Every structure is written in C-alpha cells, then in structure tokens.
Length: 169
Image (cartoon, rainbow, N blue to C red):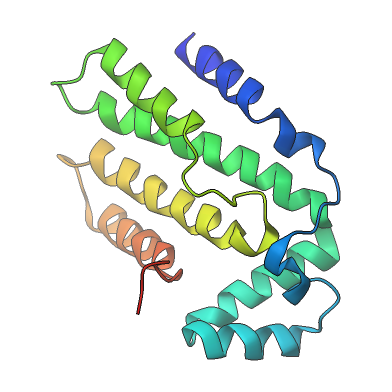
C-alpha cells in the first residue's frame, strides 16, 4: 500500500518528465549527433577514465534507445532510489512508518538537482541509483554478509562512484 501511495504522488509530481518526448536542453548539444570517439574524448578529458563509461552510456541511449529513454529511465531510477531509501530506513528501528514515509516523499518530490530533465545529467541519476542499491543491500544483509554479498556490494559501490561530484575543483 505504501508503495502505491508513494508511486502515485511521485507520478503526479513528475508527469512533465514523462510528457517531454524529444526535448534537448542546455549542454545536451554535446551529446546528440556526435560519434562515440568524440564522446570518449569529451568525457575522458573532463573526468578521466571513468568518462568512458559515461560516453558509452550516452552513446548507447541516444543511438539505440532514443531521447525519450532518458526521461523514462530518469523517472524509473529516481523512484526506485526513493523506494530503496524507504527500505533502508525500514532497517533502522528509530524511524516509524510515518517518518519513513515522509522522508521518502521529501526525497521523491524535492528536486535532487534542478536539471534532471537534461540528457547530460542522466549519469547522476544512473550512478546514484547504484549507490542506493548498494546501500540497501548492505543495510539489508548487515548481519549476514557472506563473502559473495560483500564483494558484490563493494563492486556496486565502486561502480556508483564513477560519476564526478558537481562540487569538485
């Protein structure tokens, strides 16, 4: 029931993302219509070797899935990140159901970053999803972490840190 309520509120707040089919904004011109080699050079020079992952992600999404896939995946991944936060808070006994609900709603409806609709900002959504997934996994298995789960959590955490902070330099 909580899942449906959270999703309903999130859906109502984020309808504009789903109705924006082909919008290209701000720095998106650096992605659309460029070769993979150009994207690799651009992102490698900006963030180093982790830029290759970002350039391959953008190239695949633009050329194979289309512009709307960014909107759809942003919508889905941000909601799942919010649901992961709800589940993480469920593992902490000091939070009541009402506390978890309102903290999650705040996360879901407050803008994490003001330009989440721009294609260029999709990696922040993508990698933060993996951060919350790893955090959920470790909080769910904290008392029964076997070697395999520990390694998987570390790999997911490592992968989630491929994106540079917007506050660097």
